[in-house]
Image (tube, rainbow, N blue to C red; front, top):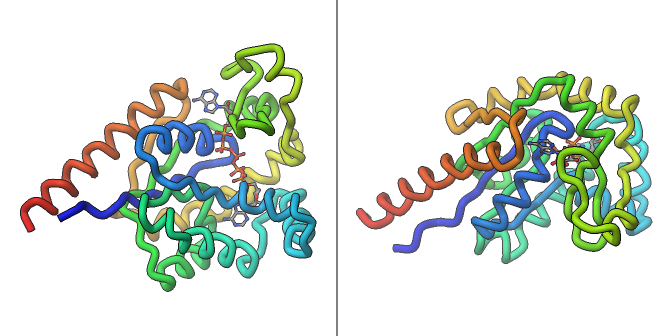
Amino acid sequence: AKAEPLRIMISGAPASGKGTQCQLITQKYGLVHVAAGDLLRAEIASGSENGRRAREYMEQGQLVPDEIVVMMVKERLLQPDSKEKGWLLDGYPRSSSQAIALKELGFKPDLFILLEVPEEILVERVVGRRLDPITGKIYHLKYSPPETQEIASRLTQRFDDTEEKVKLRLNTHHQNVEAVLSMYEDITIKVDGSVNKEDVFTQIDGALTRLLDKRQATSESL
Ligand code: AP5
């Protein structure tokens, strides 16, 4: 029998490296990357009423209400590509109500990855982050500088990537993280996210390889 596709969640403080690791994971494992923050930014860009409301919360570093976020994530996970290739859910759930909503909809993760990074590193990562609007690639002026002058000249910054706003985002993270973690204790792996991005990926890659090997062995014995 064919093994089921992987269903993974990745979590961590603002700028802990979730998006960066998701780019490396999807490259190797072909999972569909579903990022709550990206879905919200796309909604803002579309000019919709939900986007306008979401932006008000994001500006304050607060969680966007469940009625907007849960529906968006659910719709993306129900797309045929997510079902067929498996998914990598980034930045969701961020509260126990979001975790419960996902469970009630029948979405069950195989692994919950928590990136651990000391707070003093996070602020520097946020302030130096830049994005390539054409490729979607995440850069950092110091740790992942753009490869060419042409890329450098088109990089953009997120509206909530200031020192003041990241402190608000960190507060929100601290208020909610324990409740979410307690729901996934049995499938959680904690990863040291303070080392360079390749070494962070090595830890995640090892966990995913072990999971897949175990899956394969189980499906062959059926
Ligand atoms: P979201 O977009 O999810 O932001 P976040 O959680 O604050 O996380 P970031 O995207 O800032 O960081 P990241 O962990 O992906 O780090 P990255 O890889 O870019 O959410 C934004 C807002 O939307 C929230 O505040 C909230 O309002 C709302 N929202 C989102 N989800 C929601 C939900 N479920 N419910 C309600 N509201 C929701 O890396 C950061 C920088 O560091 C980059 O420059 C990168 O190059 C660099 N870097 C990465 N790894 C390393 C490394 N190992 N060494 C050195 N530098 C590194």
